[in-house]
Every structure is written in structure tokens, then in C-alpha cells.
Amino acid sequence: MDFEVLSIASGALSDHVTDTLLLLVPADQARWTLPQALQAELRQAVDAGDLSLKTGQSLCLHRPAGIAAQRLVLSVAASAQAQAQQAAFAVGLALIKTSGPGTRTLSVAWGGDEPVVASAWAETLVKAVSAAVYVYRHTKPSATPAPRLTRVELLGSAAQVSELQTGVRQGKAIAAGIELAREWANRPGNHATPTHLAEQAIALGQAFKKLKVEVLDTEALAELGMGSFLAVAQGSDQPPKFIVLNYQGSTKKVAPLVLVGKGVTFDSGGISIKPSAEMDEMKFDMGGAASVLGTFRALAELQPKINVVGLIPACENLPSGRAVKPGDVVTSMSGTTIEILNTDAEGRLILCDALTYAERFKPAAVVDIATLTGACVIALGHHHSGLFSADEALATALQSAGESALDTAWRMPLDEVYDDGLKSNFADIANVGPRAGGSITAAMFLKRFTGAYRWAHLDIAGTAWKSGAAKGATGRPVGLLTHFVLAEAQALAARKST
Ligand code: BES
Ligand code: MN
Ligand code: ZN
Image (tube, rainbow, N blue to C red; front, side, top):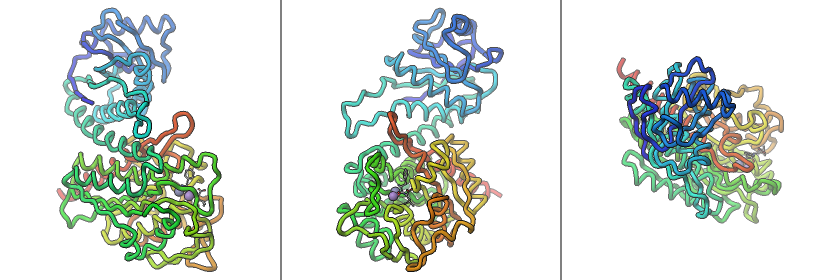
């Protein structure tokens, strides 16, 4: 897909030759800034009752009078804010899919007097277009092909051009990362094994010069003493893989950020087996891992001046004669013994060893990303990811990264009062606590392994995929993570220059 920024006087919008002009307009008509012909078309549509000036409304007009575009798609936006524009893009693009599938060139403009932040506007648009044209085909080659769209023009004033270009560049990189994350999370368990994930990571390492990738196998993991991770993996015939990605954008002496992604390529629950209904969705249980791969894909393209390490423990959680059993006690890499009371609380068991492994990088901060608990879905639904951290600055940084990327996280509690639940008579710690507050005790479990550095945990159980008719991965939180890393890189640069 080609994204092109064009400078165009707003009076010339109606003369712009294109297949489809997607025009976002404010709900308040007093705030329209449109050339005569467009204003007339819009007014007619409103007066005729074909378009109501409410957020989320849209209309497609074919060969509108006095307008050079073949089609005019009007989409009403609540305001110039990125979130409102995003919603209007999505509605407009959905309408183009059905009413203008022949569109090859799409031109997009904002017709309101309240100014948009051009870079954010462009980034949001690029992400929206990429999301709209993505089609999963890996195991369904017969899927309706993506629309014929090959070129998207962002129309703005001359003063906006450079900001729009910045946004396009960032949007393209993040969109590529989101698409990679969606694609891998969507692939079924038999097409996205730990070995497949490792191969994809290695391929990324080969494609980008600043990215080095290493994969540790069972033997190396045993050598490291990752008894907790290996306990989860032992029930499956698929060998576990521990993927280490290293993006070096700064000098070696700069402490890296470490991103740890849960990579359970299928979670049956193990001996504590899950009910059958919707168990297929547990192929998405490597959404954290997919988001780490996607973030590295974006970073490799954007090349920020910062170092980032990615750690992905990848395995299946299956029942078998060799599977770990409730009551088994295992020794983690940290030396802490763990009583596995429920084999379905496997995410924390693979993450704790990865978190211990992270210590060797003397990280500036560690963020883990995991589809960790059903309880988090109950708490937050599907809008915000759960954010857990005892570090105020880190929590704030992640929260604002989520806001600027329109990939939000909501802060959850993480104080010692929740620690009691994990007591065991047979080990240093149990892997499950009481049902109530389940996402918090899960985070408290992880916290035990993070004493050596600043740490935050993102529970993406409710945000990594959609269920029902629109079943599929979302690619979240690639946007949040990429914005976080970029902001940290900027902070590093600011510190250096003072
Ligand atoms: N992968 C699941 C969490 C999950 C469940 C995410 C449903 C999204 C939807 C995780 O491994 C799990 O099974 N967690 C258990 C923990 C419990 C046994 C303490 C859960 O949430 O039920
Ligand atoms: Mn589980
Ligand atoms: Zn799981």
C-alpha cells in the first residue's frame, strides 16, 4: 500500500481527482470548512435525511455533482481528537468496502475548523486503513481477497505536510507490527507451534540489521534451571522454545528495555483441563508473544536510538502421561519452589523463569505482556488492557503510551495486601490464589520474580483478540508498546543533551 501526503488548499478539495474521497466532517455544521460544491452535496444529503449528523453516521455518494471524485464518502466525527477521527475512519472504510470496492485510490481529508494534530491523525489513518484491508488467509486461501485499494492520499494544508509525513512513517511501521502480531495470533495451534514462532523470529532477525535473534532449546533451558517453564512444556510433544530478540539502536552500555511475551501456543489447561466451549480461542494464548514480535518489527523499521530485548517463552500446555500434575512442586530458575495447584495457571509459570532470565540484561525496565487471566476480562472487559506496576513513573509512561497509540491500559492495584493468597505448605509459593481478584494475585505471583529491576505487567486477556462473528486477533498492544519504546528513546536523547 502506498501512502502519499498531498498538500491541497481546502478550497480545491472538490476538484481533486480520485476514485473515492473520504471526507470526515464534524457533527456541528457551523464548524464545516468545505468548498462550495462539497458543502452543497453535504447539505442536500442532510436535508434529504440521507445522512444524520451524528457520530458514527456515514454515506456514500456516487458521482456527486460538481465534484471530481468518483465517489464521496462522508463520515461524521465527534471532534478533531484522534479517537473520534479513528472511529470515523473505521466507519468510512467499512462503507467503502461494501459501497466502493472498486476503489484503488482513496483520498482522505478532514473538513472541520478544529485542527487535528497532523502526525497523530496520519498515524491513526494509516493504522485504520491497514487494519481494514488485512485478511487472514494462511489456512483459508479462499477468503474474500482484500479490497483493490493500492494508494491512499492524505490531503492536508502545506503547513501540515511534514507532520503528516512523520505520522505516515510511524503509522506504517506500527501497522506492519500490528499485522504481524494479528497474523501469528490468528494462526491455529498446529500452524503456530513454538518452533514456528521461533522460525518467524529468526526470519525477522535476518531481515533487519539491527535485530539479533537467538533461540534456546530444551537442553539449554534445563541447563539454565528453568524448571517452572519446562514443567508446563513437558506435557506436549512440541518442544518448547525460548526466543531472545535483541534490538540494538544505541551503544551497548545503555541499559535496555526488556519486553517479555507469554507464548503459550495452545492452552488446554493441562491436567486442570478447560471446558470444551471456546477452548479453540486458547490458540490466542500467545498474543503476548505475538505483540513482542510485532513491536520488534515496528522498531526495526523506525530505528529509535535505544536498546530493547525481547524474551518469549513459547510452549503448549497439554495433558498427557508426562504432564505436570496438580500438587507437583517445581523449582524455578530463581530457586524459588512453586506448588502447581492448578496447571491452567501456566502463564505465570513460564513468565517467572523469563523474568529471572531478564536480570542478566541489567534492564532499565521490564514489561511483560500476557493473556494471563480470565479474571482480567471480567474486571475490564475488552476495552483496556490491565496495567500492573509498583513503579509510578513506569506505570504513567505505559498509560500515556496507550493513550497516544489509542491502545489503552487501565491501572490495577498491586499492593502487598493481595500477597497472602499465594501461600503454600509445600513450596515457597503456590501458583494460584483465591478466585476473587484473580488478575491481581497473578500479577503478585510475577512480582516475586522482579525484585532486581523496574517492572510492569500488562494483562491483555481481554484485548488481544475478539470473539464471536468477528473472531480474530487485534494486534494489541503493539501500538502501546511501540509508543512506549519511542517515548523512552526520546527521554534518553533528552537526558543526553542536558
Ligand atoms: N490463558 C488463560 C487466561 C485466559 C482465559 C485468557 C480466558 C483469556 C480468556 C490462563 O492461562 C488461564 O487459564 N488462567 C486461569 C487462571 C486460574 C486457573 C487461576 C483463569 O483465568 O481461569
Ligand atoms: Mn491457562
Ligand atoms: Zn494461558
